Length: 89
Image (tube, rainbow, N blue to C red; front, top):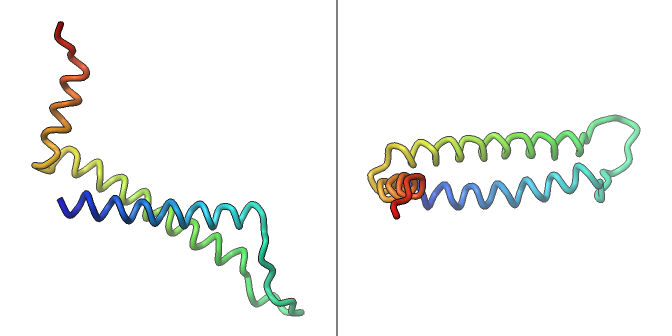
């Protein structure tokens, strides 16, 4: 379904952005132009992007769980989980 494909690519993009911004927040490799006034706030901007994309990732996971339980296409996946939990010899 389009929902599964869309959440896949949004999650992939979110993970890439979270890795890049998380790496920057841990190891600052880019310094803003020195100025006497505190006007650039580069670290705060990266942190804001990191948090916003984190919430987008959480929303995608919640939507994917919703699709798992209520999407017609996911019926096969639900049945396969039930079969895995109840093995027959």
